[in-house]
Length: 158
Length: 158
DNA sequence: CGCAATTCAATTGCACACAACTGAGTGGCG
DNA sequence: CGCCACTCAGTTGTGTGCAATTGAATTGCG
Image (cartoon, rainbow over all chains, first blue to last red; front, side, top):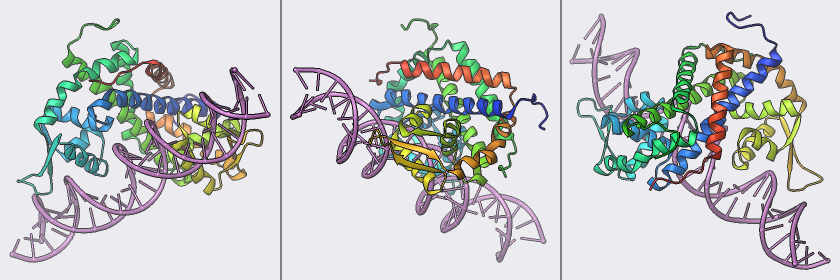
């Protein structure tokens, strides 16, 4: 038996597992749906918006750092950044001091988009229908779970 | 101004928005990563496991009902179900009483897989590192957000 | 009955996600 | 100096996720 867990029937655990993974999946996609609508006229997808958020904060960053912030690898970021570049929102250039690294920087157009996106957070918070304290609690729980899951050593079943 | 919201600066809202969407994304993918490892040797992806969970509960269901349970449409389910069928885990046949509908049923092999997957929920709960009460609270918050987001009427920015 | 609106699954096209791999570049160590 | 391990971005292949469309089947309404 695993330590730290009450002795609950497998059947009940199965149900809770279902609820958690269903709920998290549903919430994640519900967020995605609202962001998709909000960002539609800006011509941005939700992941592209997330990348711009970190760039709006830091101005310019290597691909590596963006990936660390967003938990994304180059397999996801490379084509996404190429689309942002094709849209004229960012510039990509190899770092002079380390030719392996590619620095991503906002163009004037990309920086200007921040103004138009200013309404997104408020609209989203309203759409959640939760008071800010509850959202903070939710975020805290999510972060705790994420840290634990990242640290967990998991073996495949069987 | 929107009702029910404290008067918070846009800059602060932007930060909270970032935290919420970052946290939810990170948590969602962290869950996915753990499930991926757990399910590896069963030859299942996480979404395929979710489909099997509802089938293990209900035995057989039309594609439509599976989609309602999991918030997935036929564009996602059709190819996924075809892969489960190719793996010999489910059978698909058009309903005799309504030729538009396709009923998905477990094969003996698909039903038997439930035994092997029995350890998945417990392993996952351990990996989250959260007491069961916190997970229940998390689920409750996620469900509230999801209901609100689904009901929210959202207009694109600009 | 007859036909238009609706329902349902499937398909197409696009954009993530991630594992596995590639290849260029860097840094350390003998 | 020379080589090897490592880092970093990019590519490939598979599997979702979703909008939009298609086409068959059904329902409803006059």
